Amino acid sequence: QVQLVESGGGLVQAGGSLRLSCEHSGFTFNWYVMAWFRQAPGKEREFLAAVDRRGFSTRYADSVEGRFTISRDNGKNTAYLQMNSLKPEDTAVYYCAGHHDTSVEVVPSAYELWGQGTQVTVSS
Image (cartoon, rainbow, N blue to C red; front, top):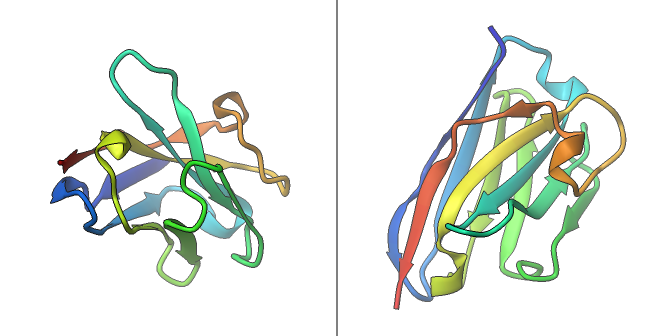
């Protein structure tokens, strides 16, 4: 069974940090570009960051560039999102996603695998 499971969300004060993890099962992890998205209530799902299959190339949304870092450990079949300098507007459900191709995409429709999401709440 193909599965992505996020963890690491929670409640943090503004200016704090969290590290999200995304563990996979049921597929060959290093065949997939991995990405993180988020969705706040009443808003569309937003691209945050993506990393290529080997972990050499990354891409970020302007809203998180310099604050968030995406990485992956193919030996552990896990992708990560390190989030620093968190702001209240970062509050959302965070999702990891997988795309079976070589291209690093930013639109949700390009990704065929999704986790269930993990809540991140940043208090002011």
